[in-house]
Structure formats: C-alpha cells, structure tokens
Image (cartoon, rainbow, N blue to C red; front, side):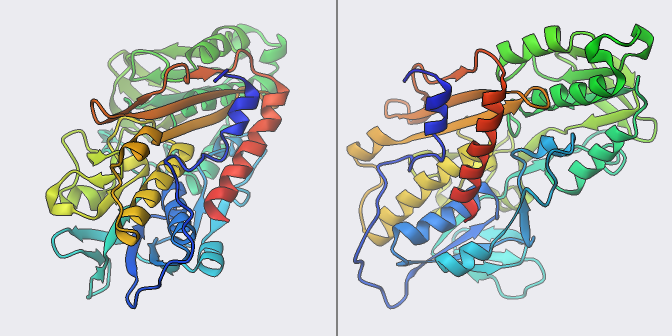
Length: 436
C-alpha cells in the first residue's frame, strides 16, 4: 500500500482485523454465554460493542468500570493549548447500555480467579461470575523514586484532571521559563505522544514570548527540555527531529538516554543519568506496566505485561483459560495506543464469537492469514499543522507473533494544515466506532 495521507484516512476506523463475522439468525441459548469486560476505554468499549453486534445479541456482555465516563488520551495534548477541553474528550457508556444492551456495572475489579471463572469486585462480598473475561484496564505507573507528588508534578498521561493541571501550570509560566518533561523507557502508551507534547508546549511558549518570530533575546527565550530515557526518538523520528532542530531549534533541547533516578516535586527538580535539572514546570511521565488487578492475579510476566496468544488475545497461562487481555496491558510487542486497542478488540471479539457461540476454531488457516491490526495517528506539530504515522501488524504463523507488515510503517513527509484537519476527522471516526 502506498503510504499516503488518503490511505491513512482509509484505515480509520480499524477494519475488523480478522476475517470478521457478522452472524445472523443464531438460536438463542437458554443461558447465553456471559462475557465480562473490565475497563471502559478504547479496548474495553470496542470489544463490548462488537461482541453484541457480531453475536446478534447472542452473547451477554457486562462492562465493569469504576468511572462514569472515559476521557480520551487521544487528542488530549490539545487541552494544553486550550483547543479542546476534557468535556470535548469525555464519553459516557450510555450508548453501550441503551443501543447495544451491555450491562454496565460501576465497580473496580481487584482479583481474577481463573480456575473458578470469577472476578472479585472492590466492596462487594460476592464475586462476579463469567464464562469469558476480557481485561482492558490500560496502564499503571511504576513508582517514581524521591519526593514525587503527581499533584505538583503532573504526568497528564491519563487524561482528565491531570491534563487540566498541566495546562494551568503552563499558563502560569514566565515568558522565558523552563518546561521539563521526561519520556519513560519503552514500551509506553502512545509512542509519538511525548514528542508531540514537546512540540505543542514549545509552540505555546514560543508564541507567547515572541521567540518563534525572532522577537526575543536568548535570555528571554523559553526552554523546553526533553529528557528521554530511550536511546532516541521512538516514533516519527524524521518528523520530530526536524521539528526539534529547525522549527523549535531555539526552544527545544532534546537529551537521549536520560534515565530518571529521583524526582523532587516541591523543588521542581529531576535527577537523571545525564544530570540534575530544575525548571518552572516539571512534567514527569513514569514508566508503565499492566494494571494491578493483572499483577495481583498472577497474569503478568517479569516485564510487567501479560503474555497472550495474538490469534485470540487469550492468556497463555493455562490457569487462566477464557481470560483475554487487550489494549495497553497485553505483551505482544504491538504499540500501545487507542487505535491499536480498538483494532485488537475486534480480533478478540471475533475469536470469542467463533469459539464460544459458533463452536468454530479461531486458529483456522484462513483466519490466521487474515489477522492484522493497525495503528494510525496524527500528531499536532504546531497550533494548526500536523503530521501522521501509520503501521500495520500481521500475524506470522511461523513464529506465532505479530510483526510489522512489509512496507506498512510510514510517516508524513511534512506537517501541514490539511493533516491537521484530517486529525479531527480521524479522531471523531475512532470515537464513534468505540463509544457510539
């Protein structure tokens, strides 16, 4: 496929990443197969919706989520320059309940009992029974050493109040202030996201101070210091290298291999393997792992993620048959992003419908040949221009893993206003496919 902007747009929303079924005329069982879905983000809502659609309501679905709404991390960097608000990016579970018949339970999952097929919920004496369990709980942050307080040092990597806090801190910065952000060791949620954020903050500060138009002296020019734990830019390398060096060359300083050692939130100071830095705003994004319910239940590996079969997303642990993990917590090596979570959810839903409702194998040659997932996204580089990135992953029957499809990884040659408008269409389509 030619990697053009038009083809990137055609990938939205993600197609049913396997040879998807749209069954009709199922005989309704007296006791329908019951799937419990934990987590109301892109992965959880998509799998709940498509399980109901593709089973022709033949599968009962319960969504367990402690919050009343999901605030999308996708597009949330635009909260920082006030082009969007958290309200613009908030989605309720009303459509899942009212249009698709999903039973929504407001509760927090705390423990999975694989052999007994039950899920313990916080504050409830009786566990919730399931026939199949899909866990889509997103990320958990690893502990940050030192005097770290996320209320003083926001991560804004789970959208919501943290996004608003970071926005307000940026607004209060002096014109020649210093903004410091850290990028965690990969894998982390949304590979291009931190670099996108650095560009937007540089644009905010550079516009406010006049530095982008050359109307400031070096002493009055703001600084955006990017401390990356990785050996280099992790996504859209060509695009962000040009943006850092050329567009924001007098504002952005990028330092690679800067591993965070300690953070002092009160002093707005971070000590790394490359030195100690302090500034007016400190934006620390901690390292990631799978959520506590998966770790406590014994599903995670030493790296903190859950090994799964990418044909179905079922856990590889024989004690957890019928437990599926999709989205950020899975450990297949695919990128952790909202679009990818939406795509994986469809593979998982397809597998559950085949195996649990139709008594078909999910491992047929035809299905294996058609298992693909994709992750496309747009990255704002300025207040009105964006770039894009796309990647398609395909199942490899020889090694049993998902790998990049040949020729599928690409990025925009330039950032421009047309991409910026397409970014909103892309996100709106993805939101609709997931939550509506």
